[in-house]
Image (cartoon, rainbow, N blue to C red; front, side, top):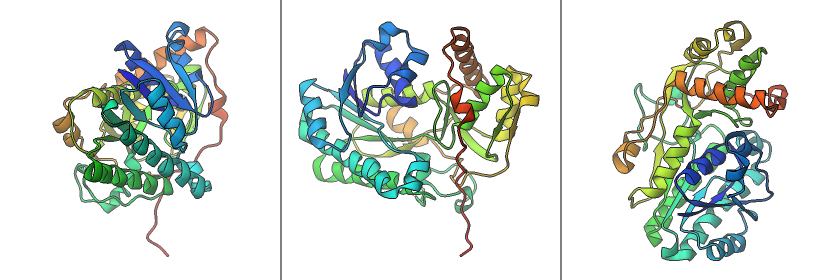
Length: 337
């Protein structure tokens, strides 16, 4: 495979690249600037050097067209986007990058015709409303989309546009909806705090997770493998699929962390605010249409994350600046006027 990844220097992108290289794929990353620091957390320099950088804006259709043609791209993963806090602060910028950028990617893949065999893009569980908006039980992919943020609305728009590209042009695509993805390299975003708590506990530092309640913890390597499997496996259509990992309360995450690092019991605390995104999401549709996907247990995912953090710490390569960064207020909703 010859894979172009937009936004590939981000957290999930780095782990996708690790999996692609392990499968012998060639990888190009299209981004505004080259920044391989997250890749270097999980790959040796010899592997990082295999990843080619393509300077370009995801909203620039000409740049996307040129990259796909010049590098004979056969598969595209679209990850580029701005997260909840930025979309909240600047909705116009958020819409430009998250919606127009996604449309540009679809246009470029459409123009490439049969040359590009598959497009997989990142949607989000943020397309759903708060858990109080749904009946009890796991929600299927086609549950009502009633997002609580501009970010979620933009993701809904992308999913709708993907459906129209298949309807009008036969362009197949797979949209994937991550929830709380954790692991080495997760340093930004509303749900990055559990990963920061793991790092802090490993370092013997206190850390407070700003939210609580229920969430769906998904280990980043599982998510990355799901993206790569969705590139490779036979598929026709344009659906968006829920991902599902360990659906637990924050107290269960805390207990799992303490099981691996007993000292976390006195170091890590958490809040009570329930994030206003449905957490009990069924991945039956994904398993049905694209086959089984990996699922590491919460304890094993935490253990693997700690092992990598420890190695980086021993090598004096562990950045701790994210532990001091301001925290994003969790998304909540109210029915009051």
